[in-house]
Length: 305
Image (cartoon, rainbow, N blue to C red; front, side):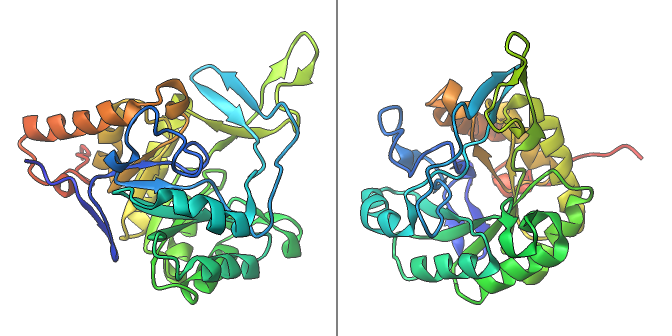
């Protein structure tokens, strides 16, 4: 038997496969395809203080080897999440990681404080690709000092595991990873979507109503691998790899460059039950290679001198 467990501070995942935020709804929508308890954890849709309708349509467009999206963090808001969505996750044998986002540092702190005492919340993932309205719209994840401040504020409000999700749309992601760890992050998740655009040549209009959107899917996997590798050289906390994981081989690549766990996102839209085969593939690979603990594979990249 292969030990697939992952330890992130006081959060123990029974295996390294998580459903990514924004692609798995509130945690129950995929029950018709597979049992969510199969997963090591579920990262919920990003929650904000007030409900959000999201961006205007169209806000999703398919691209070669990927997809563009500009959903706009559409969600029911913290009040309905607590009363309507979290109770539906009772009984699931998996960890629940709640993704949160705010317009200000204080909003992140308030969200975490509201969720801290709920027994079904096992950890938090901070979506810091959001604009800080008090700083002229600069994203929290684009400037190290902002990253540090929002993570420190959250750290003061919770004893639970704090995961910070980083954007690849920066020059040096290692600097942001270090700022997050200095603020109190227990793990770093990377990457969020890559800035992209597509145009309809018949109408000469953008395929996404807002023009610029976030690119995900297999097209961004090489970028994601490079960012995980860069972050691994900058920090020592566990890393969670995200970006273009649709097969078990993709997950293995992330482990080798330094990720302790992975999240599957837009791949779920193509193959909703993909986690079943991915998890089995990871286990079989480890058995074939004589790897008894997944952790022994993490960061095992061999670089020629």
